[in-house]
Image (cartoon, rainbow, N blue to C red; front, side, top):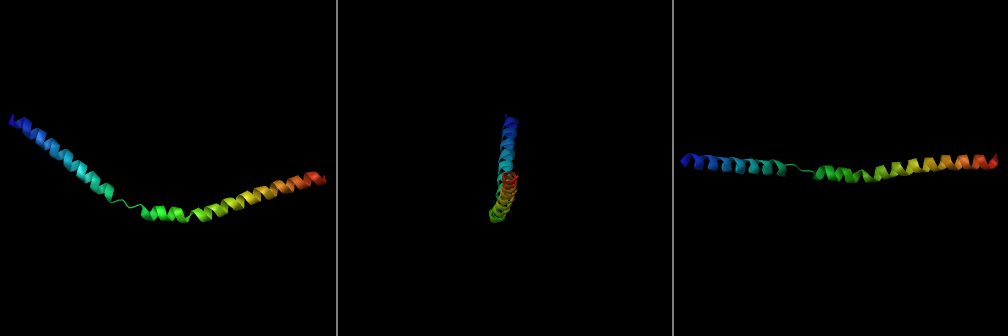
Length: 70
């Protein structure tokens, strides 16, 4: 019976240690800088998207005017 108790106790201790170490390593990850950087890139990406859309519309308008004059 003593051997069974030792195995159960050591298994419980190992599980507790594994959970504690997993929580400690998960707490060390700081993503605040990455989130801030991604948020800062929203304006340049929006400007690039607007420029691409304007070029697309300009080409379509040019083709439309060329067809109307032909």
